[in-house]
Image (tube, rainbow, N blue to C red):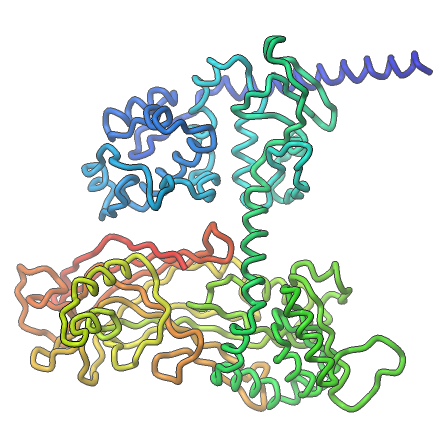
Length: 631
């Protein structure tokens, strides 16, 4: 028996050696091809990272190796620095002083040595979002540390190409560098992103360590372990099992964001604000209670039920079963108690037929994406999908993806989704919507210096506030339409172009000069409407509007401020053709803009870009650099 065990161990050792040789051969093949290294700032390409960095130092005042040495950056800090610089250059923004330019050429003419690397006490590339490669297949990311590695007393066995591919799969990655005592659970990989080669399937099991002082390293290939002594005997320590991947970096970040997000909804103050929003409540209550052909006898799924108020409306309207899903532990318990106190809680058992509209609400705690862990619902068995998912600027919080997930999993073909449409509107706002007038006269004192600084801050940060309809200085236009019954999740990210023209008839306000017939547009304001249309609400369709022209809601409106106001005028005013478009001397007849909204790297946030061009009556144009906002 002992002999047989020894023979098996010898066979296993031979298999390990063969697999490690295969791995080395694969690496060697990869290394034979010389990758092109793209400059961080221009289109120049080089055959080595060393040549590229020399070019960056001499041509762009960016000394990568010096910065690494000065700041003592490790592999991950250097990795983030490269991705940060690439992201800033893509936005025509100086990586060190943050100034934005109209073109890459202007940016290159501006580039200078960095005066400071810090902002608010942290490195400007400190954010973990820069662990995700900005550019796919960026050869620089897995070669910049090669020279440094060659000088070490050991060689790292982690394959950097694999590391890049792991990173590229974003949130659903492999596993990360954790010691045995504190190892996190592995994150399953997405089979759709798996490489066709077996080595990729086994990559999550390949253990290694980057930039470590540990002299021993353990490699696992296809589940077989092999120890290799890499350092001199005086440095030998106990072997640690280390697993490398960036999965848990992102998985942990998403977990933290979700915990904070759902934890925030444990506050009764937030629920009071939402329930006190009469526009919101009247729309949902009207759509649910005034459409009996939709709700009577229906199976309803309420995504993100909160206190359960919408589920109670559904039960009151005659639904035969209401599944109320709530991710917050506290609010799920509260919703259960509320349903019980009102005689509407579903109770398992043969004798639960009480009065009509009672005993149908089943509260389930958990995220809707994990609903199968708590309750079994037959696929495509739900008649009505109900949710109040909207956030600021409609898409903030990114809860819409959860609603679409529930729709695709459980809604019957032809089933109803409430609301079933959503529309984002945009219009230009005037001076009265800014903080400037307030600070010009504070109990008789001029504090306009504060107003100017607040205005400058507003050009970088979106503001959620109630906008007075008299401060709207252009006609409103549709930015984007969504059909929730048919849209795909990736349609949440979009780019839309539009033109704004001065309001033909505008009341006198802070932004209008009645003598010159001009007005100043200080930025754009976004709001939304959701529709409970006649497609599903046949008896009584309803519209929920957050427009400045309708009663205010807890969503308010979302304000994006231009870098400088644009003077506008209707018709063909007397204009100085030599003056800049959008000034008093040469007012613009319209503003052409383009807005992009996309889900941000930071979970549940959105990124917004704003491009602005003023167009004169003679079709002459003046453009401003793109503005980037995060909500």
